[in-house]
Amino acid sequence: MENRTYICIDLKSFYASVEAVERGLNPFKTNLVVADATRGRGAICLAITPAMKNLGVKNRCRLFEIPDRIEYIIAKPRMKYYMDYSAHIYSVYLKYISKEDIYVYSIDECFFDVTTYLDLYNKTPRELAKMLMDAVYLETGIASSAGIGTNLFLAKVALDVMAKQSKDRIGFLDRESFEKTVWHHRPITDIWNIGRGIAKRLEKHGIYDLYGVAHADEKKLYKEFGVNAEFLIDHSKGIEPCTIDEIKSYTPETTSMTNSQILFENYDFDSALLALKEMIDLIVLEMVDRGLMTNSISLAVGYSGREDKGSGGTRKLDNFTDSTTKLTEEFVRLFKEKTDRTKLIRRLTVGLNNLSKSEYVNLDFFTDYKAEEKERKKQQAIIDIKKKYGKNAVLKGMNLEKKATTPIRNRHIGGHNGE
Image 1 (cartoon, one colour):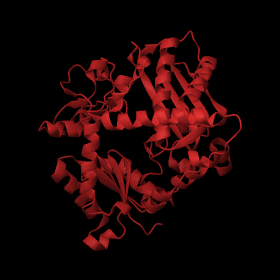
Image 2: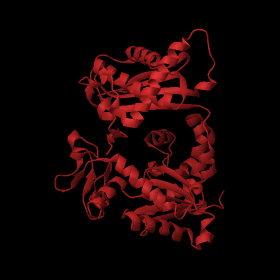
Image 3: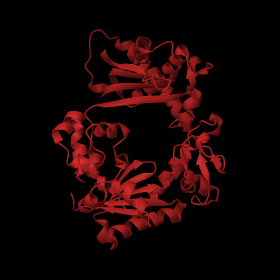
Image 4: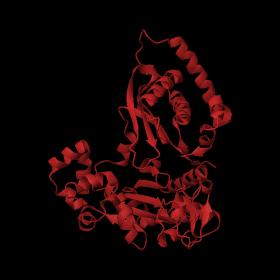
């Protein structure tokens, strides 16, 4: 696939840039952070303007970590607004590139297969990238950077590593230039899909960059990482056979759903159990709305102590179900078995695994299907009301208790203010 050309465009400091532009300010000259100040000095900054980065402030810092000498504006997160902004920018891309050749990677990042567009627009890859970047800037005032590569991986690394070194904020990599410029780049965590965990495991083998991976004993890598070593080895050599078309056509053999939240404060066992029941309610309704059932659940409990690894587990059920009653019973049983009652809890994650379409599930002689169908109709009625009148249109008594989280979470998107 080395005869193809990909572009990856990232909107610079997207949330912060949106807030600055909406105030008529230049994000490259204005100190602004996006954070919910009502959460106190420990609130995480979801984004900071490039001007703040130039002062040495790190992205995703907490408010108290910003030096007192720096004056800055605090903008409350507006997730729904950012999503609308992102959709508008996507519509700008569609003026030039077909949706079949665009893969939306995140709210602020897109991949483009521009192989056939170079002749169409009579432009070089760099000129085409600049054309798309300029179109977005003229339409919205949001600046961006881009990476160009002969496969998706190289385009992403060109964005993350090479674009930062370029005056026009555009980087380029093919396999030859990749070996010359990125093989010895450190830290290795700058490379797409290599986090701190993988980096530490590589360090055990004396590997600190992609050159080390490319020249390592592959048997040792497979022993350390299992089948995932294949991706690591390919990427260390600048290889990525997957295309945008293949990504879009991929259907996973098994699916799962998760619901996670960081609690507003440290919760004791009983308060966390209340929050857990609320989370189960929400995730099961989502599953029912998608016409799915599950026969496996998972739970993760994070404690307030930084050194505590938390607890949790996975449980296989006797049969497939979409019953809130049954799933709540199983989750509560798992929570009581796995959770340390003496510790304060700060994070909860629930998962529904091995999801299957309800029409494909085999019946058994031990399930009261009339009762489940009656519950399903009630669930569907709740879903319909919420879709029409809002998520908080129907609440249970437990949602009104002091430590309940649902009414507030229903107003959030991605855990943040959803205006």
